[in-house]
Length: 635
Image 1 (cartoon, rainbow, N blue to C red):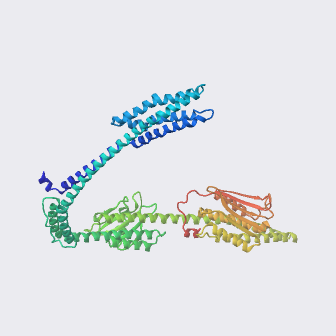
Image 2: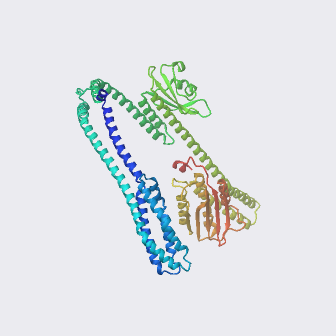
């Protein structure tokens, strides 16, 4: 056993710690035991002491009740009941029952017996016969008797209190003895342990630390002198072997660091390429020079000289080259596009497929389910790309595919917006200027007939006047249309455009027009902004030309969630019940624009005078592709 202890520092340390732990546990266990055994004794002492004080209270009450009022025994009855409650309180009885000292139990029984047999009957007899004619004489006799026996009763209570205090003190003394023995043994074990620690641990550990510091400075010739059979000795032998091996591993480690450094540089280049590609592809639409620059960056990272980017032609099984930074692949020369596009998977095309020497790596542009084209890389026959390079190319292919999709959608949106605006222009020309020109054509034909028939002068003058009025109306409508067609929504949104419109009408008319815009955000689509602005312009134009008003007000706000209310009011003469529609198509165009917004447009006279043009419509719920500032300018 001693030999095994000499071979194990851990066992010796564990044995020492075990002894200290056992001593500590013994001390704590003794403290817990004594604490548990003395639990409640302090409360029992206090409770027993209160019995002594309660006895004196009863005696004082007997003396005081001699000259009391109509109920001289009420307080005595209350004090008697309280004494019995304290005497039978669990705070006292639990300690008396649990103690092993018979003297305490005997003293408690003595107090209980004297109270129940002598004192309690004496007091309760006086209380029960308080209404008797002899109550006064009986009370005096009982009071004298209680005064005689109370001193002995209190002495018995003092004896119980003293016994309880002696029991508690004896246990505390026992606890001090246990703690002193435990402390002495613990200090002895600690001193022996410190001595063994200095001899068996600190010396060898200091030697090992010096050798480790020399090795840390790059001196692998350091050796440890302590090589015994214990743990530090075995550690010393292991350190000597390790120091010999480290010198051999150092050169190999430097080579591995060089390899890892090169791979880390490749990863950094990949991340930089992805960041640069994301920046370039975020510019919609992406131009051919941007794609060519991106291909140059890809070729520099994956070390490929020639890269070609092809995009699918919609509706055809063909593709066209978007950009190329080297020789054109052989498939493009023979226009075998199906060979490159394939099933949207990354694959290598050899000479058996395209008939030439170099291998072509085809990477899908987009995802396999929705391929937008292919990225073709020309490689030497003996060259193979690493997995991280192929993964990088596939990721770039997905980014390029997303860019192509976005460019196509933006182009389609712009095309649709242009067609829609042209349709609006054609409709407005047809509904306004074309109708006016038709009316003028009819008047010219009428004037020609009148002149050929040599009609009366007043009829010819009347036709000329109507022709002149029609020309002025057509010219005015042409100017309004030109103003409308020149209207553009800038990137600031509807609010600033409305403010500019109100400012223009205030400048060219004598009206005082106010704008109340309570829309805190800009939730409108471009289509909604254009139609709302045109309706407001047409309404203000009617106010300026026909209302004879001095003030007008334009207000915008939310009526409820996603519902916008636009109101144009004036204090003019008001709109008649059956308004004249001849040569005036503004109201019809306003109604048509409101219908395009799926809204409700009402033109009504105001109670206080003037006209109210009220537009109510619900905003579009989905605006996942908001237009760019360039699109706003196009619209």
